[in-house]
Amino acid sequence: MDLLLRPFQYEFFSRALLVAMLAGLLCGVMGVYITTRRMSYIAHGLSHAILGGAVLSYVLQLNFYIGAGIWGFISALVIQFLTGRKIYADAAIGIVTTASFALGIAIISTYRQFTKSFEAALFGNVLGVTPNDVWVVTCVTIALLALVFIFYRPLLFWSFDRDVAKVHGVPVLAMDVLFALMLAAMLVTTLQILGVTLIISAIIIPASIARLLSDRFGTMMIYAAVLGAGISFIGIYLSYYFDIASGASVVLLSTIVFGIVLLWTNFNQRRKRRTLDSHLL
Amino acid sequence: MEPLLEIKNLACGYQTQPVFTHVNLKLYPKQLSGLVGPSGCGKTTLIKTILGLAHPWAGEIWFRGQQLQPGVSPPKVGYVPQVETVDWSFPVTAEEVVMMGRYRRRNVSPFPSKRDRQVARELLYRVGVEDVAHQPIGELSGGQQQRVFIARALVGEPDIVLLDEPTSSSDLRVQHELLHLLAELNQQGLTILLSTHDLNSVATHLPWVVCFNHGIIAQGEPTEVFTPQTLKQTFGGEMVVIREGDRILIASSLSTLRHRMQDNLPSILRQTH
Image (tube, rainbow over all chains, first blue to last red):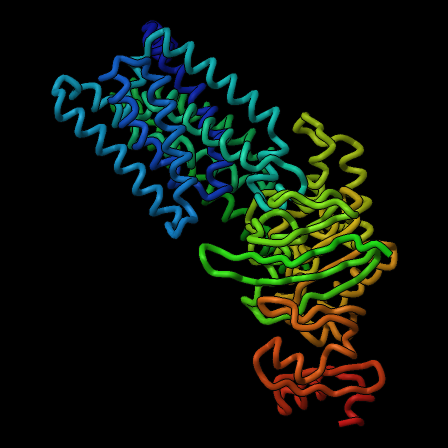
């Protein structure tokens, strides 16, 4: 028992577990919108774009969350603006995010003292979160979950069919802006947990597992939230014993869970089909 | 009688390319009309312009005697989009799709109310698919999917429903069932405009047609409008038209016509040929 509880004696580790769970929950819920709207690439790109904003806010001595958040929000809007103007969505994402990422790298190469922070931004540093970070992640998670609750109906309609939603009175432009804001806020607050390169897994894997388990949007959200929080908790907990990077541990665990659920759902489907065939014959 | 929807000198396009110009059209209450034309002739753009989803370059749209602002959807309108534009793998059930249409009720709670479910069930029953309420939309047949979308379009008790190519990817039986359903809804007082490129379905089921190709070529009853000249102007090729009383059969060539007659046509037309 003592062995199992050992990681909790370190305050920084308990803090990391709490923050990772909240981030996993938030990414899981938002991931349902992102995967069903086929926006995984935009989320991946924006996480890279935010690096430019993060570095720029450091240089300009702005608050990280505010500076990087505004940068991410503007990047999302620019992508939306470019898309449809003879530029394909994936190309618009590529242009905006790589330019922003390159700006971050350019500034980092000018100010050499960033090297360590750059690594943290790329691969995450959940064990380094401060009590202040815990507050920010908690507040943003509560705020975004409240927005999902309040705007559940219009966001669902907007996600499924934007044109018909507009005809039925859904303010689709406001939904575009709201979702870009929510996406930027989620990425900025959760970036330091898994980093630019791995954050996308926390967004798409729990939502994809939930899709395998349910055909209903609302149920998917509950599954993805529980899976996101659970996998983040267990992943970071296991990283203590296996002595591996916490971000990598979460990603590997979520991939294993995805594989198991995929096999299980396929097996179940085949079994049901066989039962049906035997009844028909 | 005052028209329900009136379009005056409407023009629309994308980038610098006009899609249609000088469109004048009046739809009266309880009218069932078909917008007929080849693929790419601007039918979808016209429907989208009426719905406020595309900004007109010129012209006016009037609904119940009120001029609509460009880009604003008319009140009390239902819309059934083309099936090709719908993501059928989206995780929602038929009942949830219909309940989406109750957005204007301004219910903040994400959980559907008893009334939401009741309305959805009643509408699914009205269009004949109440037994698939809990099935994911991706698992429904093409005809069932269309009926679910028609049920959603009816949620707000609209004055008019616009359907974009509702019969495009269905087989002949489903097409006829769907057009019968629309005729029934029309008899209950609903104004309907549907776009299609299937001339024979329109000729059989719709009392009013608008031939369209980047503008209105002709409009009227199918027996009057479907002439080889009008169809050539609309579709850009020679068409064979056979009439027997108020029945019409149209085909792109005599061999197609013979084939169709052997397969599907009433014996009366076979004798005529």
